[in-house]
Image (cartoon, rainbow, N blue to C red; front, side, top):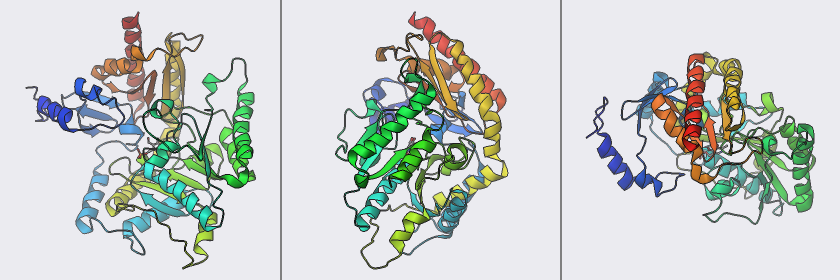
Length: 460
Ligand code: PLP
């Protein structure tokens, strides 16, 4: 029996995990053969596993523990609200003080006139709700043909049928039925994979033209919305060419196509602002979706913020059939909203966004050193989002064969050295808690460098 410092019996837990847990996003067969990584506690930017190994959490839980682990203030807010009023439905005219206060506070941060907040249970349901809101609105306004949705390859928007259908990672699209008749995927705006010799400006022109051409092909009167992450996070932290976000937003405005900015990852400080859309990309979307950093992952919560312009059309009349038939038992959960308020208190008091703007460029600059390694084809990202793309042949940007299990091997090398990264085929993704220190950034880069080099040595 492998009993660790925390009083957990690792072997017994591992056996129960294998026998009873269905894990998300995995080759299910692998969960029967690979030893689970059981995480038991966290502090700041580190977590400790059930065998007593402490690691820098390079993935921020999963893009989400923005203010770091072990925040008593959030735990207390959760406990206090649970004791006072653990739950009440938000349906109809019912509300709770934390949900009302949190909605107003989010609205104050949102760009433009995005004043109206619909709380959900996470990012997928925020995206689902946004798309359903758009469809509801168009039907109500007598435009039922305006239903086509434009999205992009390599986007990730969630795991409900609708949010998965607007996602575009090729590896995720093979084994399940998705909605295809009114959802259209544009080619990914990935500068690393642009045609040889093409300038970034010309590439941007081409990607913006992809959107406009698709709208014209479908007919603007038939296109409801364009949904886009500002940076394509799970698709490999793809940073579109400069100006792309603004120009695609302008195209949408020109053709009366709504723009949904999916800030599930980029929000709440990860790019140095509570919402990145306006300050970083100069866009005022019609709808913003968010989750993850909204509570720093302490409890599940998501939200969509809708502009006054869109909302006003639906509230101008009452009793005319504008019944918004969308929502969840746990929408606007008071405990989650109390956690969100405490999380935002920390973000404000500790100037987490300012800290990211200060340390983010250092993180990117240090990570860029990995480009010195032969097997690293690209290092890309912004602030506290980064992706290391491994290559079998750097010059030709050749993707390594899947059976090399490249990123997975790196994950395994880094773990015992005290770093957790996110392996995705030939991509290594990092999105650490925003409270990571410069010393921990240095350690992250050194460990990752060693891990990559060791795997390359093993493979040759
Ligand atoms: N949108 C984006 C951009 C995401 O990265 C994710 C999850 O990673 C989602 C939506 C779905 O969020 P959730 O997993 O909370 O449902």
